[in-house]
Figure 1 (cartoon, rainbow, N blue to C red):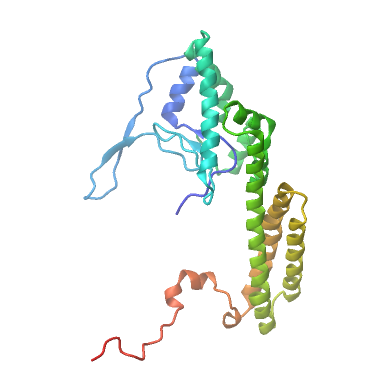
Figure 2: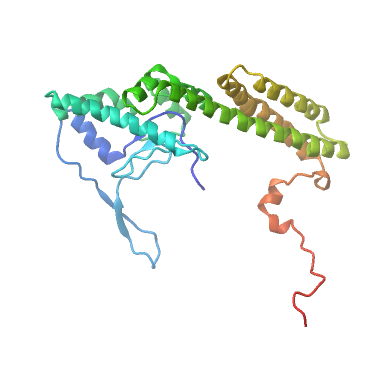
Amino acid sequence: VPSPPPPAIVSTYLGEDITFYLSHFKDGKGEGEYIPKLKTLDLGTHEVLPFEVPAEDRNRTSPFPYGGARFEFRAVGSSQNVSMVNTVLNTIVAEKFAEFSDRVDAGEDIHDIARETLNEHWKVVFNGNNYDEEMQQELTDRGLWRIDSGVEAIATLTAEKNTALFQKMKVLTKEECESRQHILHDHYWGTVDIEAKCLVDMLNQHIIPSVKAAGVGPLSDLEAAVGTLKTAIAEIHAAEDSYKAAQLARVLRLETMIDIRAVCDAAEEVVPANLWTLATYKELMFLDQHTASTPATEPFFDE
């Protein structure tokens, strides 16, 4: 079973070995070479002999874990194009290393710069379970960056500090940041618009007729839901800009449609299976047991 995505709290998992090494380095307790440990991995099969792997194992609950000679950014959405994500990450890294380089060229010691940076940002190191709500609160209390809404995260693309960074590194102009923000917000509300209209069709063409045919279920609530959805869709289309439309769409998707889903589930619980025209989870998961094949009336081959 794949792990769910990490929460929207930007921390980094380092693992015990490199955390110990960097902790001692930043506190002035050592400057030796970091030598990662190895561990033996035994798959328990005769066909594959035990073999050695790096001791650092990426933490699947972390948005930015260290996995041995590399960091992984694991907070990208499953359907998201990684090009803009990589553009942002590479721009941040390039700007920071340019700053380090300028300070070294000016005569500062690279070790002092590294210690200062580690001590300033050590709060982002977290090797625990990011799924734990108590740990999420602890990270939030540390002051780690946290935006739980994708719509609001997109809106920060045009924040002054971000447009200044892109312009400084000659990656994007302010106008190009604004256009990308508009496109991302338009894509968001446009997707929700399609989903909401699909739900309206499902209600009108399947769920409400099934409830009427059965004579049981929350008919009035379902009919009211259609009106609620149509009103919300109209408000999105009437929004003054793409950001406001995306904000309304987020409420529609994550609040209104969730509530309507509960009403639909209540109807499915009481409507007889032979009158329910939508595929159930049981039918989808066990399709082979719910699909009848008609024997062929004609032979496949001539005699």
